[in-house]
Structures are given as structure tokens and as C-alpha cells.
Amino acid sequence: MSRSRRKLEHIRHAITRDEMAVNSFDEVELIHQSLSDIHWDEVSLRTNLGELELSSPLFVNAMTGGGGEKTASINRELAKAAKETGIAMAVGSQMSALKDPRERMSYEVVRQENPDGVVFANIGTEATPDQAKDAVDMLEANALQIHLNVLQELIMPEGDRDFTNRLRNIEEIVKQSEVPVLIKEVGFGISMESARQLKNIGISYIDVGGKGGTNFSKVENKRRKQPFESYNNWGIPTAISIKEVKNVFPESHLMASGGMRNGLDGVKAMVLGARAFGMAGHLLRILMKDSLDEVVEEIQHIHDEVKVAMTVLGAKEPYMLEGKPHIFTGRSKEWLEQRSTSL
Image (cartoon, rainbow, N blue to C red; front, side, top):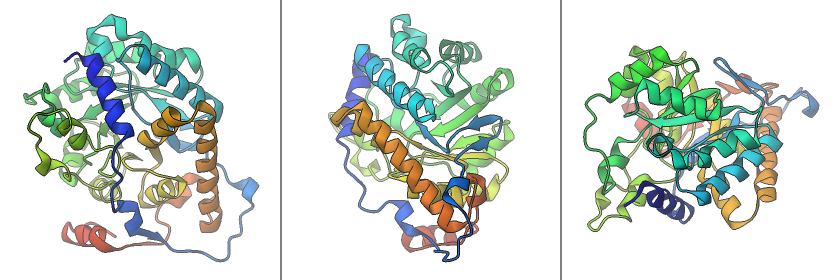
């Protein structure tokens, strides 16, 4: 199957995915504070993520590209929404464009539509430093995402099977990159052990990409003649993955994605230690089923949801949310206790 056709299948399955019965953020309870001393107009969503200055902790996470005009149209509309709302945006994997120049336009539309915005390029761990530079140059990107998707590749009928040089590839890209390099899982979460490995090769930006959003085990299984259905529930839930990474790499510039449904989920992620949170499937479904205007309205609503929580919790800026009183319940509490992470 061609790479472009595969991209379109991913979009179709992502839009129709089943919601998880329990989202890990449902097992995080924020403790209400009754005596706020903040004025709504004093609350600022501006935040720093290492070297990156963001006007909002919310960003459009990696979705698509490389599927011809259909994916170009999606990226064009998402870039318009990002520009109008002032949020950062990541594109989907650019490996297709690095291998087939005809697909470059499906990514380049993002910078064309949003010339002054913060844009993240995106490559796989198989990429070389030269390919990484090409991906960044293609978008005049402010940062580079490298996505980790071992399980997806293994379930994918035509996926990769050799991962022997991946960590070394990442290390070489980090050494040569002129922009921040962000490591991103694709829905299976990052563990304490993986976080240590990333720290040891010079990575400081991590998007946990936990379980809870688009399930690429299920997506790829739908494309298989004989599915590996036993892996449909594999992965580390997003809220837990944040704690796993923070436990061993507290100085990391941490982002959260994977099943983010609303601004309150984003606030919970920042209370746990993330500095930004990404949404992909949620915004894509609104765009595909409604319109660009609805996406813009949803982003603005999410911003207001974040500001409500910040006001209640007494945080004038997003970084002030970290460590606000909270508890874990259910399976998340049991997981963290057994993994000896700090609650």
C-alpha cells in the first residue's frame, strides 16, 4: 500500500475511534480552593517551554500530511485555526515528503498559512540528521518532533521491524539540530526507563503521548487480515506517564498529549508537571464534521476553561499550576504506588 493511502486510512480510523471507558485524567481530582484573590484579566496563558515562547499552553499536535491534497487541505485549515488563536502547531510525520518531493506541499501549506506562528516539524526515528534538517527547513520550523512508534510499526502490516539504531539516530540529530528537538510518543506513553535513556542522550523536551487518545494499535489492527487484538489496550495512560517522566527527569521540558478532551484535562496535566498540552484527534474530528469556525471556537473555549481553573486555583500564569493540591484515585493511584512515584 502506498504511504499516501495509508495516511488517509489513518485519518479515517482516527475520526471514528472509540472513546476509552476511563480516561486517566478522570482519576486525577483537583482540590477546589474557595478564596481566589485573582482577577480574570490578570490571568495570562503565555508560557515558556524551554527556549520556546508560547502564547498558550495548548498546541495542535501532529496529525497528518503526505496524503496528497486531502491532507494538505486539513493542514491548511488547522494552520488557519492556529494562526487565528495564536497557538503552536505540529505537522504529521514528514518522512513521506522526504522520500517523495511531491508530498512536500501537504506540509508547506502550514507555514504559508501561518508565516509568523510557532510550528513543529516531525520525523521518525529512522531519519538521518540531513533528513531532520530538511524537515525543519521545509517548514522554517521552530522545533522538531521525533515520534516514537515502535508498537505501531510492529502492528502495521507494512511497518518497520529493525529498531537497532534508533536511539543512536536520535542522539546524532540532537547534536546537529539548530532547533529544539522534542521527543513524542504516539499514544503508548513514556516510562521512567525510557525517560532516563532520553535524558542520557541529551533530550530535554518530551511529549509523553500517552494512552487515552487515538489508539494506533486499533488503527493498525483494522488494517490487518489477522489483528493483534491483544495489544489494543497496551500503553501508559497520559496522566501516569507525566508522573513517570517527572519522577526521574524533573528538569525536562514536559508536554502532555493523548486523550486530552478539554481545558480541564490540560490544567490537570500542568498540575502534574507538564508545561503544555497537545490536542490532535479532538480537533480533527471537529474540523472534519463541522468547520474551521467550529475549531476556532473550540480552541477559544478551551482557553477559557483553562483560565477558569487558573483563577480558582490561584495561578496567574500556567507554570504556577504545577503542584497545586490534587489526588489520584483508582487504577492510577495503584499504578503510581507500585511504581514508587511521588503522588
